[in-house]
Every structure is written in C-alpha cells, then in structure tokens.
Length: 628
Image 1 (cartoon, rainbow, N blue to C red):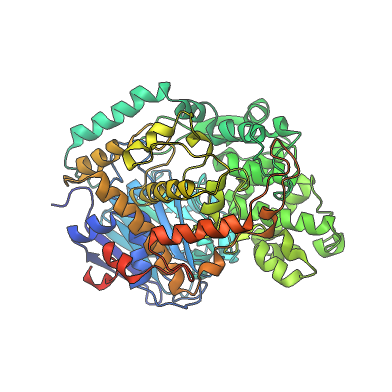
Image 2 (image 1 turned 180 degrees about the horizontal axis):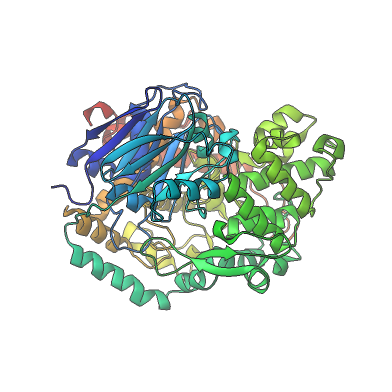
C-alpha cells in the first residue's frame, strides 16, 4: 500500500457531467510530491497551450501533497491552479484550513476539472464516491449561503468545501476561492475559473484512514514544534497577533510599508490600522488550521459596519491594501473590506490595488466622480472603497471596470494612467516594498503568476549579524546579504531561497512554520518526508524538487507566450520613495537588468527570452512529461 499518498486522481469532465479515477505510481509521486509541481504537471499534460482562460478548455487542478493529513503543524495546505484569467499565463494559489485533509481522506490526492457544466453544479466527494449535484439554487448567492446550504442538504456540518461567491460567478479576473469562509486561494483569479465552468463549489468529507510510514516519528516532530514554538520569536508574534501583529508597524519602522499606491514607505497614522487598534475595536476571536497550535487567524465582529464574524478577520495583506496604501486610517473599514471580499470571493490584494489605482487616477484628474458612479474615490475615502468592493463583485457601474484589474483598467482608460499601475504580469503588488527589500523586487519580477510576496524569503532577517542567517547554512549560504543590494551574492542567495519556498508550495508547508527564519529546520523537512512516505531522502532531493517546481511553472508560463519581457517591474520602482526612513531610495534599472541576467544563468534559462533550456529540463526530469 502507498504511504503518504492515496494514489488516486479524480478527473472530472463538466461538459459530459462525468468523472473517472486514474491511478499514479510511486515514481510520479516522488517526482512531483504534490502541490504546485503536481498541479503544473496536469496543466502541461491535460491542457493545450493558448486556450481561453475563461473558456471550457482551461484545466483546473486541485492538489494535496504527501504530507497532507500528517499531524504536522503547517502541513495542511493545498493548491488550486489553472491558466490565469488575470495574467493570461500561469495561475496558482495556496490556502490552509481543513479542506485538503477531507479531500485526501475522501480518497483522492488531486482533482483535475475540464469543460463547463451546462448549468451550475457543485462537486461532492465522499469516501471515494463522487457526485455532481445541481447548484442552480446557489448561483447568485455568497460563499456563506453556499456553505450553509450545502452542509444542510447533505446533512453534515463537518463537510469542508471550497466555494465562490458572486465575484467568481461574475468572472472578476482576480476572484478567489474561499474555504470555510476564512481561508482563501487568493491570487491569480482561480475563482473566476470556477465561475467560467459553472462550478460553485467542491465539497469533501472523508473517513478513510491515511497511512504513513512512521507515525511515531511524525508525532515526535510535531511535539518538537509545540514544545519549541514558545521560544521562537516568529511563532510567538504570530500566536499573539497573526501577520497583522507582526508586519504593519515593523514595516513602517523599516520604511517599507507601501503607502499611497507605493509612492511612500511610511504611514503617519499606522497606529490606527495596527493589531492593537483591531483589538480595541472589532477583534472577536481567533481561528486556526488543521493541526496547528499557533491560531494566527483573526476574527472580527460588530462595529459600525456590523461585521459578520463567520468570514474571519483581516491579516496584514488586506490591512495594507485597504489601509496605508489607500491612506485609509480606519481599522473597521479594513475589517469590513475583508468580510466583503471573503463573502463575494475576491482577492483582497488585487481588489484593494485596483481601487487604489483608481484613487490615483482621480487625484490626477484622469477620472472624475462622474466616471465613478458619483463617488469621489480619493485617497483616504474608505467608505467609498467599501462601496466599490460590492460593485466589483456584481460588475455594477464603475465596478465592471475595476473587476478587470489595474493593468487592464489602464489599457482602457489611457491618458497616461499606465504609470500608476503597480503590477507584474498584470497581477498587483502585494503589500511589500521592492525598493527596500530587494528579494521582493526579484520575487515580483520572476514569479510565474505575477507579483507575489511568498516566492522567496524576505530580506531583513538575513542581513549580516541578524538572527536568521544560520538557518541558511545547510544550503550553503554562510553569510548574510544586505537587504538593499542587487549584487551577485544577493542573486545567489535569492536563487536558493526561492527553491526553498517552491518546496513549501509542493509539500504544503506553511512558510511561517519552516525555515529559513522559522522553527522547522531544513533537516527536519527531510525527516518529515521520510516519516510520511518511508523514502530515504536528502536535502539534495528536496532542493531539486524546489527547482523542479519553480521551473515547471515557468514552462507552463512560457508555453502560454510569456517571456523575459514580462518580468519587468513598473517604472515607479526606479523612482525614489517619498516617505519613511528610506526616503530617496530607488532601484537602479541597470542593476536590476544585470540581476535578472545572472538569475536566468543560474536557473538554466535563456538570458534573452527567459525560457528554460532543454538541458536543465532533462536535469530536472521534466523534459518528457509523457513518461509519467
């Protein structure tokens, strides 16, 4: 019997409302292991290049991993991947929660969905049984209604599901997929792919026992985490206040808090949107993911906007996008924006950045209140931003344009508005400043999905003399590197750290639980794989998996026609920051070009085009995917 994985993949054809189960062997699982790598494999083998991202020929892959179902803190995540309707290339997003465990216990390691159902449906997977059920009565309803109704009609409140609201149904290009109303596959428009397929939800419930090679070792590893997290600074900060408790004021102090559409790096009212302010106003509780003792998820309730707690509460990215970057100083506006985005299934980052782009257009006279359904969408107007979230979800009025994302908005508006667009590959920047954290500049440029802040480790903990530097010793990085230095040793450091983060996206490690800069060291990640599967593995194999994951995503991207020219940062990154302790700091365009040249060489990608070379594909065993 397979250990660490079920061995079965569910393939669904929505055109025919049919499904089949296929089986994969150990060779397949050891090569891809799950997550992003496995999803990329299905996008390459089950879908032709050049299909319409919102058409029936797009393929949707939902994948777990060999660690899913273990008692390890942070190993609960799953991937949703497809061709992205936002960047027209590669799309994927991970989320935590509980869905992945139920899917695997229900008998499947992954689901591959093709076609478009003739009418709305939801997929019901339970103990190796599969049904496509009518969802006409759920269409037009939000994620909360869908979840409550599906659980009621299946008479099981322990069912876990991923679902879309009106944003996904109305094909908002950055619509997300929401799990248990408070965990989101947020980036790259996967909710719009659900909507384009008339797929309202995937519900899972399983009672099958998952088998692992060394369960006692897995318990030992998790005991290590529980015992030692109280002494680890990152774990303690997250346990006390989640990512909002850590990032907002620290980033402001470092001059890298995105402010006013990335014009500045500090917000003079940062205390009003901090975790302490959330605690004083609408914070009502905390939540967690499967087998994780940290409980970093916020829950907000009440306040002047009558916030619904079932949709959780804001973390840092939402708070940054709807707070300092809009010059909004009201934590209750931010908490309500979080609720609405989860209710309607919208990525909070791209939703916030689309509205922020419109605010800068308004400030510069390119757009007027008449263009915006009568609203003065100016910086600081949080209540107008909330109205825009609703309009985006239903594509009403000006919301129809906002639903396209900032890049396409500028394409339609023109008048020089393009210079206000903070995107890479048409996906909006997350709330991290590339001019102050150069790893982020590289991550935004090189991510297959577009600007993404979890592509590589952030810079500050790895400067010389900082506490996290020893975490990199096992991968041969023996000295720290300045945060603001696009020098060869920075590119080398970034290259290896990017492979580590690619491993997270395949093993489903929550990157706040594993090192670098976290509690689980690299050696212990190898021990986890061995304990789950029984494989004799090594750090070498795991790092190779990271590079395979990263390169395979790039292969999907380049098949869809994106090349090095799409790895460009916006012009604003080469202009000086206007606020904060880094005022005057800017990226150097020539240095950035040389940095990308060096990265492509290290990765085995063509320097002119960014396309992976054949030799590197053979080295990574992905030149011929038909062998699997």
